[in-house]
Image (cartoon, rainbow, N blue to C red):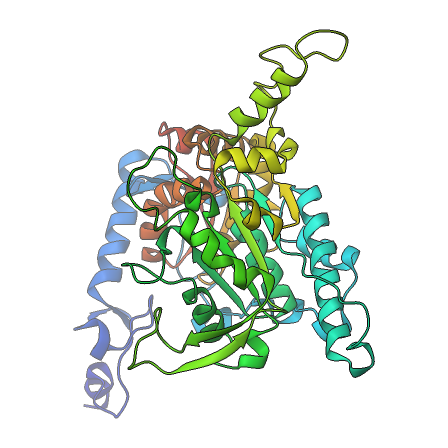
Length: 457
């Protein structure tokens, strides 16, 4: 009678599956096998599938879905001898950047700021040097103005910035990383949504509304933040238009007072002002504005200027001299930007202009693996939570970088490519708790093979 009670789990304890360790109330009715083994339906079926695939092929290496499994030593996996998983709560760890934040009150020097950016941003050394110096000078200016002794001294003007660079080269990511490392409020907005006041769309004050919201409505903290206006090239002055340019030159004119520094009445919790929305006063004198854009077509304006200036003599350029120049945007001048459609008053309030280079295959490959929060490291962290080791062969990384270059969307293409090829793996791996290593090969990326999966021994 006691033996029967123990078998049925009626002594106050619940029977559990010997393989997955789930109780009977979770996995359903258990199968009782001699001598004293309880298995749930899923684990029993998995055992039959594993045995049948090994017996049918005569090879301990078999397939799970479309994934190849290789058992170390050529032996059949024995669940009783394999290392069990740890609890998910023990495996999960917080790898946030809390320990990486710099103290803005101590004002880190430019080389320290660049060194920290190097840990997260690959390449773009000139851009990182420029932005490090500009940020250092900006917050040094802010600290000087906050001190009573210097209020009647020489007034240092703001150093707002304009970043030029093709899509996907890291403009937004560079600013995001900088704001996170400095622990200052950051507002990122798209210039395409801005219109002249009174028209459908966001007013220019909505930029400060986002900054205020990211500063938890702390006006003083928001006034020492950073605003990044992306797609700034989309508000260039329209050419040969007969309608009112409410999203081009008018927006540039509306941004002038923000860039220069003024007291602006900002709606709290809304993108436009109306009688039902509370407002507060924000001074933009100490807010650093960074504008960025791809500026398509600007390279042709630069080439035309350069080849027109010198067509004969020792200093002349051939017509196709700059066709393959990847740094052509670094040669942009104020005149080129005016020709593109930016008004002189707007350009004059962005004194620091620099360009980011497009990414080549080697840079793409480094982006995959080297930064602290590299895409490959993120996937490896996800797999590590399931106690699975993820590996990539070198030729697989080369192939992923080549596919990303072909998409012509910069570093954004890397994640989309990886998500596509990792889908089946991330779906199949959690099915088997004894998988130890997954290796991604170039054949799998090409669609001609499967990733190599090894069981833990």
